[in-house]
Structures are given as structure tokens and as C-alpha cells.
Length: 147
Image 1 (cartoon, rainbow, N blue to C red):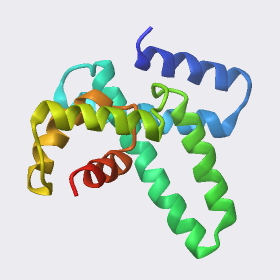
Image 2: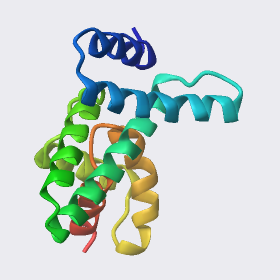
Image 3: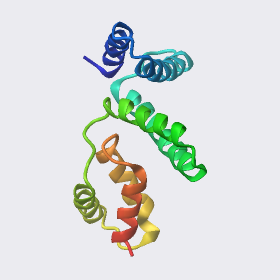
């Protein structure tokens, strides 16, 4: 079962169990996917759906930070709940240690030795951690090793 099918099945389950919050979150994700499919005039594969899910989580994490700064606890709680729901569809996230190991290996593979070559490292690294790690963490790890 691919991610789109899984989202459809979970949406049906949320309808049956009358879980309005989960239902609205899944519908929002499905509409984003459907809009992109309409724009591209084809169905999306799992990697493209993963990109959308990662982007949606990133948007909610950014919003969560803003809600916390503004003291809007109810909105922060909603954002956290949406992150939890969307996170169920992403692969298991890598730990910081696992990210550091992958970064070190990629730096050795590319032969990079300075921050000027960071783009080359990131280009080789991102396909390896796609959907499994936050881009900010990966970027920080690369900067740490290329100092």
C-alpha cells in the first residue's frame, strides 16, 4: 500500500471513528497532494508524497515556534497534534548520531574539506536522508564537520 492509499484508508477510519481533528488534518494533506497532481497532470509517487509531508511538517514546526513565542498555547497544541498525525506517514527519523555518521561518510566520499564545498556535500547527502531527517539538523551537522 502506497502513501496515498494509506492516507485514504486512514481518512475513512477517522470518519468512522468520528475523529474530526485527524480527519481534517488528513483531508488537508490529501488536498495538497491532489492539487499538485492536478498541476502535474499525473499521480504522485511515494517520494513526491514524502516531500509534501516533510514540507507540511516543516511549516507546522515553524508555526509552532511562532505560536510558542506569542503565548498561543491552544494553537501550539493544535500544531503539535498535526505534526504527530503527519509524522505517522514519514519513515522513522534518524537520530543526531546517525545523521553525523552519514554526514562524515558523505564528506569522505565527496572529498570536501571546507565550507566552500558545502553545496557539493549537501547535494550528495540529501537523497540519503530524504524524509528521514530534518534539513536543518543535516545542515548543522555538515557545517560542524566542515569548519
